[in-house]
Image (cartoon, rainbow, N blue to C red; front, side):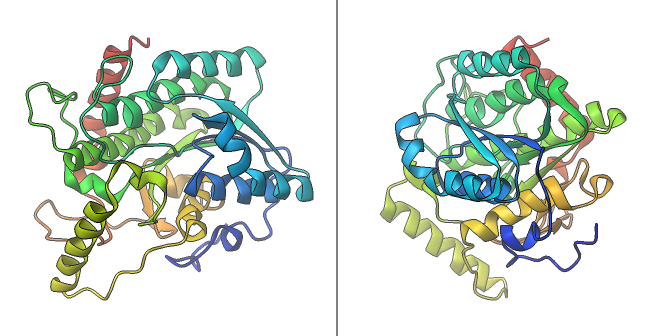
Length: 325
């Protein structure tokens, strides 16, 4: 399908215009806020049947009313289930129920995540961002893989924050490294991109592909762990650096613009084009040289986030840490 006309300002409705998703089943983590709500809304509006995970069912019921309204109007559906991505027992309980039901998926979107909280550990003892953003999704997609049919896709939500740092396979939990919330976030987003590379390598032989996406900078609940004044100061500083490098003023995206790349890569773009790649602005991201000087808002992907050897090493490390076969 020709999608060359999409760009940074394209919305979910524009990307999916004319697409019939009736009969397609989609699994999305984190559908009670921001990008998750908009992604689910756009999918059900085109007839898809969506299963979305949330941590708080009461909150999600009100937050997803717009999704249910869209589903009722189109014939799509939304089912909400509780899952705490930080708790591997919770992830396993949900995936076990999915496997037991035996219904297949055409699209899995690893959308949920946390950003830059103070140091903490998951119920399983892992550093909070690595344990949630990487290990939680690793267990999820590893266990859902048998339900993904030929032609299915996995979309991992990464971020241009991956440029804050590569994964540290020797000290993933900051046991010996001084904890920095943004470094930990960057490592986890690199980890998400590498999981897509590893998953794609494992499943492309059967027609199942995977990609990671940077949705852009969107002001959502992802910033809930950061004091407003701290976030505003950091944002202003990053924008000053962005301008100092000769860039045009940066524009924050709306949720509809941010979720567009997820749906472009997950539904619209050619599977061979996006397989194992990192996408942004409804396109394949340009590679950055290791020594390229860029701002936090610049486009492009660091080579380490797409390194197939690194991806395989991370996959094996995740399997060891979580005890997954």
